[in-house]
Image (cartoon, rainbow, N blue to C red; front, side, top):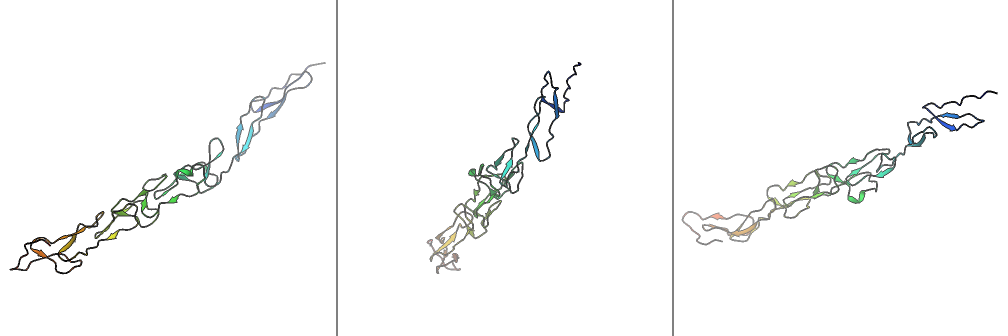
Amino acid sequence: RVCTDNPTCTSEQWEFSAPTTTTPRACRDHTTCTRLQYVSQPPSTTQDRICSTIPICNAGYYRTSAMICEGCSAGTHSNEKGQTACKACRPGRFTPEEATNKGYVDCKACQAGQHQDETGQIACKDCEAGTFAKQEAQYSCHSCEPESYQDQKKQSSCVKCDYTCPVGQSHSGCGLTQPGSCSACAEGRYKQVAGTGGCTACESGKFQPKAG
């Protein structure tokens, strides 16, 4: 009777069954993962490669290097399935802190009266006094036009200047953040009718020694 040498597994094989005095070593080829799978356990000389299905994450989530789905963090979003990263919110939009792991599909638009000039933000900025944002999702606020003002923050419009003043007074100082005010006509000037008109210089040969 003659004894036979045990076969040796190649580098592309693993030992499925160890040899005994009566049976030879059994080798099997390593499993090859498909393009829809990943190696969840590498092969060894005594263990086969284990392939697992690559997860397809829903919109609002992304696939991590650990092959799990996580919700897009604040300031980001994912509006498509199967993404490996979330996208930063563009200017004029945001996702808040509580968005973390909640799976935001779309970013929220900044409200009228607010703006955001940066990407990937978790909140919007209020328009400062003297400026406004009429519509949602604005990158910037606009300054009040001449003859208008806004003395409050976070506004969607400016207020037209009111030049109405009583007799003997005229209006000045309205614009940007200031509503202006009525003040007495200077010496040598007058105003006989209440309204929006200004003060008038005294005619030749006449004078006005008092203000107002």
